[in-house]
Image (cartoon, rainbow, N blue to C red; front, side, top):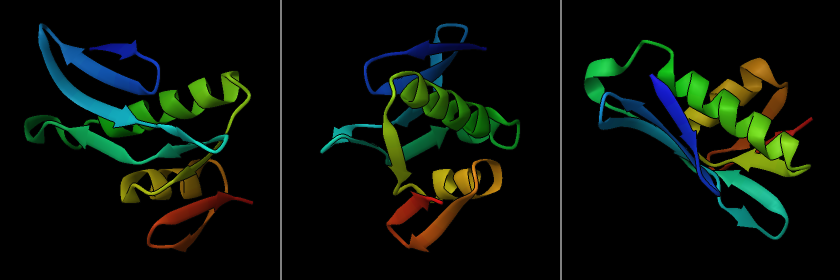
Length: 94
């Protein structure tokens, strides 16, 4: 599995096929993790978690702040970064 980072997107490639992605556009100085996707046949293998982890590390490397509107990313952040889920569309850093 190869992971490729673009400006506000990281995607997973298996062979020559894109099999997952996470997007994190910047709005008003905050990166919003707003979409995580993994091909159905590869779910449950930790790819989505790896994508979110890489996105958070990339945002932190840039010195940015982040929040999540993607439900998967919200849960990942709550479990791994101590975020508090404050509503269906927001996850804030404690």
